[in-house]
Length: 205
Image 1: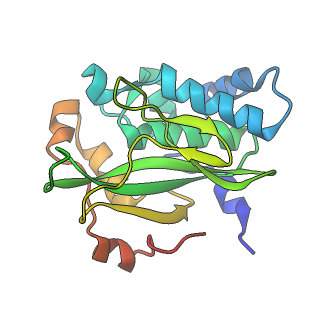
Image 2 (image 1 turned 180 degrees about the vertical axis):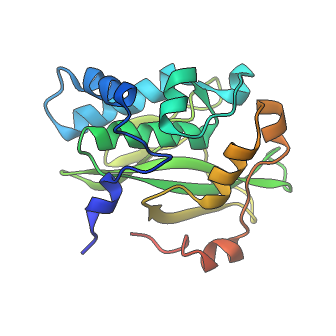
């Protein structure tokens, strides 16, 4: 049986006990009585209120949940860190999932894309993608059906089913190394399917 306690843990990156994160988590949860309603409210708030760094050309590059909240911007990975923190602050287990996508939708080069999985009492693990919608992306929360931002179309793209309790170290390292959204564009983290298999990302939870 999966130990869900690890998906409620606090860490340097998922610092959900940071006062501002706790306050925001409680504020979002107000008026919602179920884990599904709270999770949807947290998801939609991060999706719609935190600006994707590239879509809005915003700095700085954020990583820790508290910094994503403070600056109201982040790459997909960073937004997933904040969403996990808000969910965990509301006692809802949350983890991290990744896809490998073509950067230009035509082939190489590739990069990782980060999103979340949330454990809902009525549905089990359910994946959500809070990267932010626009005219070509329409990610929604409607369990048990997934509606993610991206689908896998090319042979070297991949959907890694594992649900991790902490973000990938290569993702954290990239976010902590780069300072501007343009620099980050040139240093996006990537894992080949072979590397992902070695890290256990090919096995679902």
